[in-house]
Length: 368
Image (tube, rainbow, N blue to C red):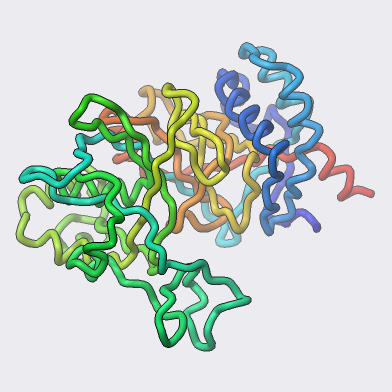
């Protein structure tokens, strides 16, 4: 598989801010992907970055163990070459942010806790080209096994109006529908249970319908100016308009199902699509069809100051994906867990330049 012409190789000296970034946490995140790779190699993306080309770097990372800033820098310089990703439209890339919400929850429904998080239903089936019915929307990766064959699954409005009541799917109950919706958007949560314990839940499956963001709906309706759409402004609008919550949320037909997901390290984020725990400020979600999990990306966004007040110039590791993350220079930055992380993630909407760090072996193959 040839490397995509979207990759434009450069030197490390041409990557803005490369020398100033402490890459030790990025190295630790990369090392977690190396451990996962030994269990089950990642699938290669369509831009020509073969998953197997990381084998040498993964082995070296596992041999090193924990490293400091200088050693981390030297490791990436030794094993990779940066390549600027130049979108076909000639523009720059774009980053948003996501986080792991932390909310109060109950194991049973009460007068206060009335909003369920649901596990995967038994009649939800995976769809691929081997079982996709003729004429069935090619977007759908899930469907419902009905008596007359595979049909679209119930959408958000149907489920929230009781389509799955009585199925025993409730994992936990929340007090606020808007909190539940944002957990659906983020795909994971820390639940502070009424008995004092913490439970972690993460994405298990979805109905298959296309995602429609509440911010886009509110902007299209003229309720929030497009430039002012943030998680905070959306929450504020819902608080000011409680009678219109269904009107907005039900335009997003996609509905997420969850599973309990205990984690080995409570200081890290949830286990995401790449099957490793996310590292705050160092894990990034990318377009899984284009990119290969485990790929390091140096992301340069001088206008993004939300993390630490300085321009965002950091090495990130591709360890998650999302239905809204599409395109070669599109990323969703993991900000961490809890309210403070949500304040950061909610305001990230910035242009950015993406430099993919590609294994040296790929360039040797190209020149052979």
